Figure 1 (tube, one colour):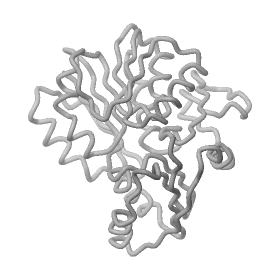
Figure 2 (cartoon, helix red, strand yellow):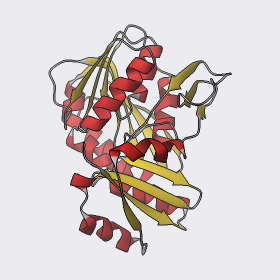
Figure 3 (cartoon, one colour):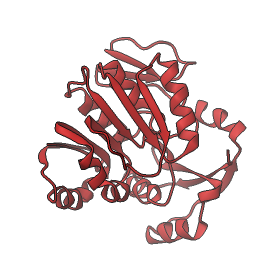
Figure 4 (cartoon, helix red, strand yellow):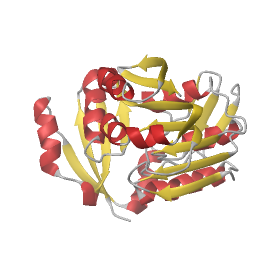
Length: 271
């Protein structure tokens, strides 16, 4: 495992933070911590290209500080910042050192390490909201870009019969496996992969990544979507909608609906 690079922005607006998350995700950053006027972003040290970061930050007239986090220090970083998340009365997400949550249908225990997806960010929050409206009972699920494994965990809790989850980062695969087992999940298969290519078909496909990765893999996702299947996408800014709908128009997909939150969106299609 490599160390991680942390970059931090201070005195920024929520709009700047959202745009930075979208742009930094496209160059390999896979973990973010947002506070009221600050943002911390994390990337494997081997993937960090300072010039690419500076190109983004200069366009926003922003500066950042940079530091290295060793693998052994990561728990201290996230434990000091990680707070429970409640998605409506549907799902409560906490760490194992938090007290159990009440008043929710499902509780998920997450140790995020360096992986993205704790429910704090709008994209994961909206994916969870949308999953409430989908019938997962006895369904097969493909979780593309699983991160912490949180969506796969919820899919099994909602009755999915089989879950295939992939991520390009080995740290995420290890983390997802830990979290899935911690939540007593057993109907999953994890694989390290940097694309969505595959031959099997799935009743439900979940992809919470970013626009470029989704567009690059759109044909593979559609190919693996079973007849009457549901494709649920997020990691997208509302300004990405035109590009997503244009790409979706190339395939026999039905646009179901979209929801928005803090300039982000989740969008649903079906066959």
